[in-house]
Image: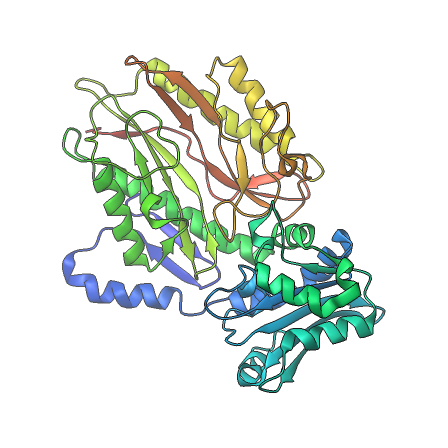
Length: 444
């Protein structure tokens, strides 16, 4: 990745990804801070609420959505609605009526000024100390006569499952005979979070490029017979610190560097990387504390006298890469998630790949496994409901092209060419240039 450049459209930055010496540490720290100084999330969040949420309410058949926020154990949707700094209990209401879309917050008086200054919501109603914001919200709901009230309780969508049991009990008691109007917000949250704005896609593209470039640079530092998987992971952690980005998922398993047999979602071990190994790195970074990437890059460690990977390894690589292209070709508005999975698995079967239990792909954006259609289920008798969901323009996915084979020692190894793509009106496009060739470690 030497001399490669990353163009950061949102921040207007041009970054040269080259190794730095220790004397530059102070400058690097300042650079990492400067890169992310202008966080676009406040503007994007407001745009998402006002442009995407009204349509999501309509598509899900929800009259009003009630989100309850509080300190210490907050709702996972809090950051998306502006309730991340709640101290006392606050109630956020979103609804459409004859006059249009509205967002109304009943906030404890102590936090109301700061919340109002964020300029996210149409109105912030102050709740005097000693009075209940939730009770105020219920009074408003009854006054408006909404037919249903969506709340964050769900058995299938954790992003729509933020209301605690005690909060639900209190709400139901306040609703009284109208408690029967309470419904799950899972379909609403799905409709809203699964679509990303163009400017969000741009940021996700930056995150994908960083993850890809860092992995390529990490492969350059490997010394066969000496370097361990864990040392490669440590190198990637250092790159994250240098660039001021954080983990896309649990730090203990990001990155997962695996030069041995398949280990699934796991941590990097102290296994020494040896000639003849196929190395898989599954890695993602988070930008601005909001948007994440999920990218895999593969390498082959040359044996003595080799200048290229063996023919069978190259064929497995081509098979996996072609599976990624088949999945991309199947991704378009109106198709089901399982249809994308089927396109890729048909090719796997034709190429003699062993069965792989993982889905072809998943939504990615605010978390690595985000809200949206699951690209899986084509070989299951009972696919999960998310695999029956329809792809829409603006959805972003991380997805694989698989080829799995049995190694000489009887263990299995899978090439999973994981890339990221966005669904467009015409079909789908990769966010960044996909990996075309196996990276060769030890090539002179």
